[in-house]
Length: 106
Image (cartoon, one colour):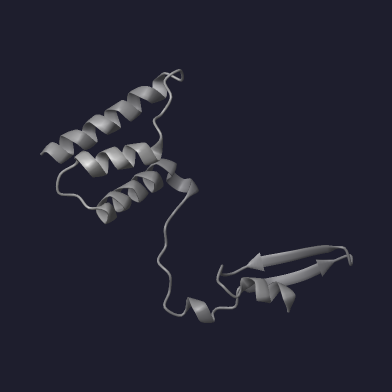
């Protein structure tokens, strides 16, 4: 119950501050440190998970989280590469992985 009340107060404060542009938002790291210190029965992983969920929810359709496929490392990093008029290059990235820089060199 205390956790729910704390989260409600934080959300309420965030909602109120949106209407008044003069009030500045507190530092994110500071808030996480305060919550981690004062919120009982929560560990760092749970706090990080909640923060990520809140960010993804707040940023809405502009961001999303997807799980990596088990076979994603074997996927070619570049789906397509073309050169137009011997001057302009077009690259379509299929997967961002450790071997992406090598695909540009090939």
